[in-house]
Image 1 (spheres, rainbow, N blue to C red):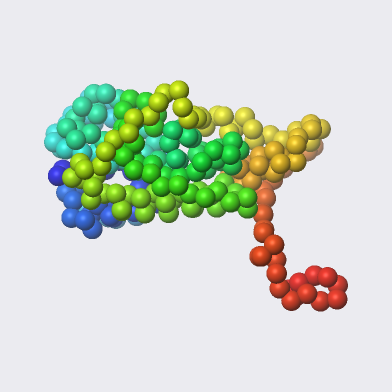
Image 2: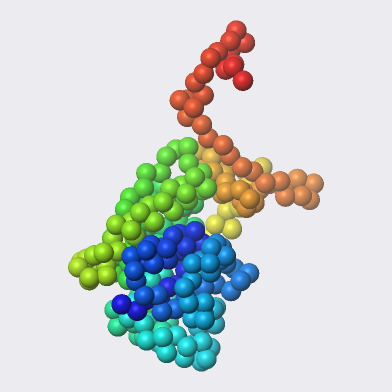
Length: 264
């Protein structure tokens, strides 16, 4: 089966490696432009046919679209790919395009699902779904739930979601390639959706405002993801960024001396 890979980030890299280890024929590689790539070096190092590399930001260009068409693909596999695929592109794939999304759809379609599981208390997880012209709205093929812990930040929950995505793809691929997984449609009236700017609007914390304590904690931990800035306050014309570390009592256990503090 001739597959075109659409990917970015560590999850994209691991999905590509799994496809290659499974002996699949990767006819083409559609990546972000160099300035937007993550793990681009690793992906390119594993690309067996670098001449079949396409710029995902230019798929609407006639020449790039023509090159994609000439690859004669049967199925597309998308993992953390950041560009929408219009109907003309989807129609090139007789077996469709599948996408790996780090959310338990229909919850948290779109951007920053790790942050919104913390902010909204929505279920977290990984989903493989068919790609349609919407954003994460296609039929669901496979899912895996992830437990969001009260000590999770955006970073730690994201790492959990990464591992869930990689494991879900590895476990589901044999049934996906044979077409034996049933498809479950998503109701447009269910679930949640967020754009990048939705989280950006919450970044500034007003030190003069009143916040419920739990909400303030969630606002900060849902944006704690070094080295990114995240939540901030303004002081003397400067942005002061806030990060949060959350520890449960088990992590604090250790020898205690007379001053009441664990042995450091």
